[in-house]
Image (cartoon, rainbow, N blue to C red; front, side, top):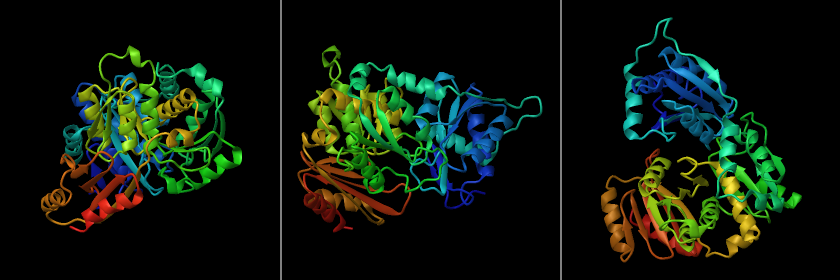
Length: 455
């Protein structure tokens, strides 16, 4: 029986190690994912993990589960989440399993299920895997057990694909000899990002580059957790500071003064980098996709670059689906996740690193100057207990804030030309989340207050 506090999502599950997440549970769900892949005629899976201390234990359990249903395992080791996604495609595997709790605190770990296309499982496929785990799957006898082998070249292939992108002018980037302050929070990024920066001609000054999973701070790369990186930037006179989360799919930036500029600017800079490369060679109007809670700085970057901007419901799976449907040139989320479909449809911090440096090199400005050159906005977030009648709340909000553009695909989003507010139920807690953005913090707070006053 699983723990009642285990958090189950469309494409996996997460929980506290030893309480919610156990080797027995991991083995059972790996066997289910393997049986699903085998049932689709592809009895091969890719396994990878971040640097958390429980990762090796769970990798052994997952391997046993896969092999027990006659599935072969390719283990890529401690690598970024996007490296696993790319390896699934490279090996034409039937599925991938990533053992990572991403930005969750140190006591947590998680399973993330990847389909044969290298994208996280959708609701239908994820539900089928959960059903198999609950029902039980047939195990193989001595003659049908799967095999295991390692793939030590997955990271190298990933970086080679990034460096080969036509969106990058490698000679220009290298000529700038950027000094980059780096914080990898002792996660998987320490094995990848320093080397990538050096290949891009950068001088790297780093903290928390060890890959032992013993996070020295809260691992999410949000401004309040980046004080040490800001000090490193100032002490070393770095051109920019970069921080990744433990599984290296999110990238946050600190400007040359040591000030965190917010994760939304990661995607905004990347969008400007991509739209700025050979615009005359593009056919038609490019499309940029981001979620409903992403900052207007990304929308501004897209429109200034001549692109059509599309918003998707919150969640990487929703953004990925919209990117595919729209044939988007680039997309992502305002949490520092950059997706370039030409590479793969998944958030990718190594890609983000390269595109950020491309933009700085081509703009010829320091990070703070790039930020100052565009309109500034303030984002405010809040939450409150969830009531029973959200439909009535949404209706009352639309009446109170009349004149706004209305989007009801994911809760309620009301928007104007220079501000917006998004109200949605949490997927993991019995609360309502509010996020508002406006030219000033006072105006954003007014939007939040207008919403909370009706709860």
